[in-house]
Length: 155
Length: 395
Image (cartoon, rainbow over all chains, first blue to last red; front, side, top):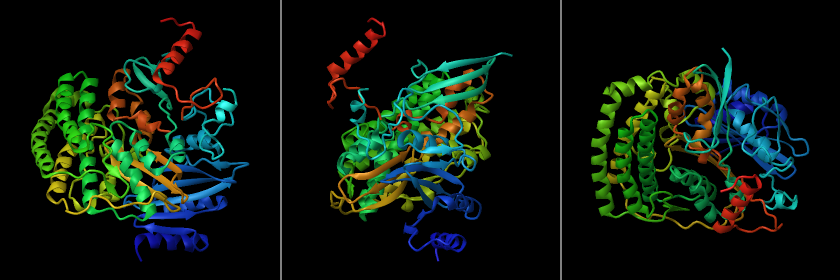
């Protein structure tokens, strides 16, 4: 068993992952789908037990009715684990992970500005990356948003 | 003592790119800094979703003018992985060659900027003179000084000739000789050492807590380099040292970059001496099958990461990129704490910031007509004149 499969096995042993929710597409890459209620426990487990101690970035995705959030974590030996969780787009509330990774701040602000996520626990601060006068409710990386959306608003 | 808040930027004579600092001072001492980014946000991620993979490659290369090959290679690797393409070895070697040439010109550029920020303009002129050697090679090899456009899905666009390779090897000898002089300057020139030592301190623990990347991390003793840890292109087949020092300051960041220059010369020699024969590209279909990939690249400024999701069409579903400077912003704010205002320029310069990369992603042109149109240079200029006139500024 190689290192990637060991990590996969450890996750299955501890969290009861259904078949197919952990994928190893190539050497040093693992993709995991996690439900929101288990996410924090899985994150803590990956940090403490498997030493994924560096956050590369966070990707937000518009998945139709859901908002997908992928946390890309890595560690010294170059393995990257991509932990994906989802929330409903009607009420896209996620919790900040700044308590675990202070570096998450700018990545989480991007989720707020570009995809309209609500990040609980994210400290007050200037927005990123859109300008201060940007209209409310306009989230450029949502699929229903077009470059022409602003024009219709008469901005 | 009363605290004073000084706004610096977004447009400021001392800054080369738009960013806005609010520096809180107690006397000369910086006790707090807050930063506003986003002034260079161009909507590239959204634009990628609206364009084909072929168009995106050109667009992604323009995320940054210095490390353009880094972004284009990082992106293309992700797409090729999703499409299941095996890139010919010769192409991987050529990507590595251009990647290291880019690192050399970027580090020489940095050395000049750092010299300039501490009033050592001779160093600036020397290192930028030497950088021209690389720029000429890149122009010769790819047709362009920047935005080389060497990558194509499935490989590279242009092959190199024996004459090219001889020329590059000769240039490496010249540059190695010059860089030995910079090493001497960096290790023996007392004013430079005194000016940079102990400035902009970032401990190893800070690097680990704040996830700093690249030379900034390596100058604080953190042994982290994607080229070795997660090899791509031809890096699995060349030997090089990952330069780390324990100085934890601006001086350490200088030593790391100068040391990396020497390693790059060695990597380029190995690439040229072991360059495999064979094709330089394979055909890749225009439509990319559904899938996702996460790609990493050690850019001159540190780890660059791209995530690409494909949906089976000729346009990507999602492109996410994080340039190294964004990862080094929080560490940079930490470095500034408790130093004098006079240290601010060199501390900021020492992360080798690239705000163009950082703010890669929307700016929508306001249109009065209600329909989408492209503004030409003349109307854009008129728009800005009218905009200022409305504000009561005449010129």
